[in-house]
Amino acid sequence: MDTTTLSSRGQIVIPKTLRESRHWHAGTSFVVEEVPQGILLKPVSTFVPSRLEDVLGCTAYRGPALSQADIDAALSADVARRYATK
Image (cartoon, rainbow, N blue to C red; front, side, top):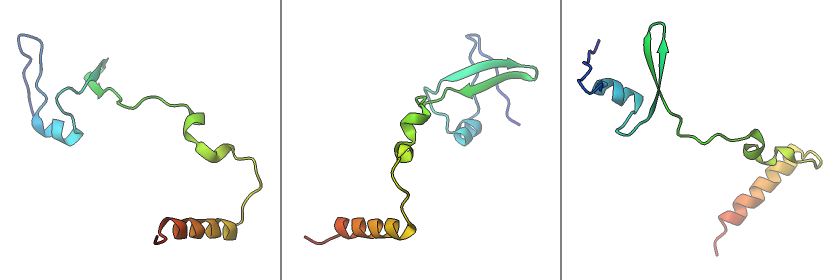
């Protein structure tokens, strides 16, 4: 178990082994919460919130369903087109 000390400026150093295991680097921002067991540090998410409609792409397709043979043919044609020698 690692220990640390609160400085006169209210700073605490998180032990290097914990920082490395969590991939926390200088400049990482945290949310600090008081919980019954003590203090909880949670890194602030670096991801921008997104809407389901923005990330599902072609799921709104309303055409006829393709057979597996049609899908395989389309994939094969695309691979042939991409890797054709010019």
